[in-house]
Length: 416
Ligand code: LLP
Image 1 (cartoon, protein in one colour):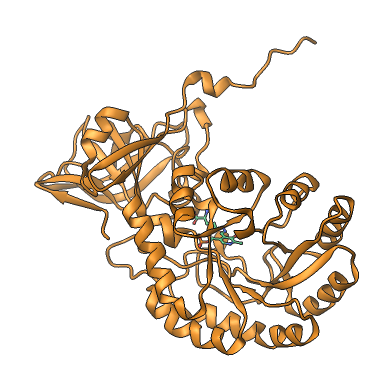
Image 2 (tube, rainbow, N blue to C red):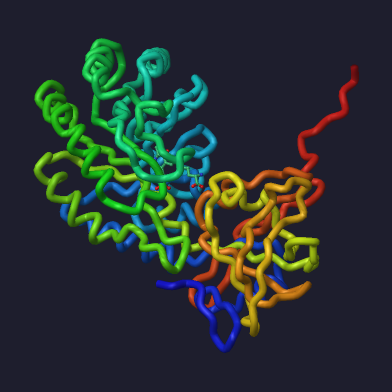
């Protein structure tokens, strides 16, 4: 489903007029299409059905309860990276038995909470972490199921900040050391070895890095299967890329499946996947109102009411997001689209051919469903935006806009 389309010159989110939502809820405003979330989940589940993967939505991409709950209703699990995400996933209706917990720095509190909730398994990134999980499990008289995260040292051909499976990255254990780490896990009390995990990076647009990584871990998987009867899960992580530009081809689920499924079938293991961006990236837009159009000495600036605190991807990763008008206009001009924040890095687009817009017009920043609201901050004491979900002709507010009082919540004047 292409969830955001023009009808009679006006942008619609499914069957709902975007301008009406902006008038009702104000701007900046995130809008998500439930239909697109469902379609993406179905496309992946159906492409991969020969190996019946457990699809664990990577909650870091979009933490709104309504989004997580949409996937819960489709039978998905969750991939979490903190106690907070685990709390959100459970609260939004994902059974703990379908939640996997990753991350290089799990605290004792995180681990104990996850053990009490009896999550599916921990993906473990180092030997000291194995020891810590074992200790916590022993103290709580529980068994911790674990999958070691291996770092296959492949280049996912993506931005360096979001590449995670190269040897210089902090993630996982290198293949050479993995067997020893499994032997340690087998010796430590209260641990059960259930599988192997890898996650090589994000916004990956070809299947090649996956097949490369799978080939690299195949031998180890076979050895582990032979050695540990409880070893049965291959968690392939996430990373499937989406299209951020009309010219960019997303990683097609069917094509991806055609390449990896035969390999997975041969391996005869239970498959877990942790997609994030693929499920939510193009399900969301950020709607923002133009405050001023300013003519600088060498450039034109379209100054909008959203800022890098709402969506930090362009300055952080040089990420491209399409910017389109909510009401179609005639003509174009070249400009930077910038926010109100006191930083030159506060931009959404640089030197972009834009439709000829003016102050008070609405713009939509596309592909803002993943790593957008979830990476928002309160910098410059700006409350975080409201979020709305649409389904067909219906729309619902799924998070209220933060108020100034929210900004100061929890602060106290000291009595020193
Ligand atoms: N599993 C693990 C262990 C991960 O670390 C991640 C993402 C995922 C799954 C989901 O990856 P996805 O399917 O969404 O590519 N903030 C960056 C992306 C950071 C990715 C972090 N890990 C961005 O805005 O591009």
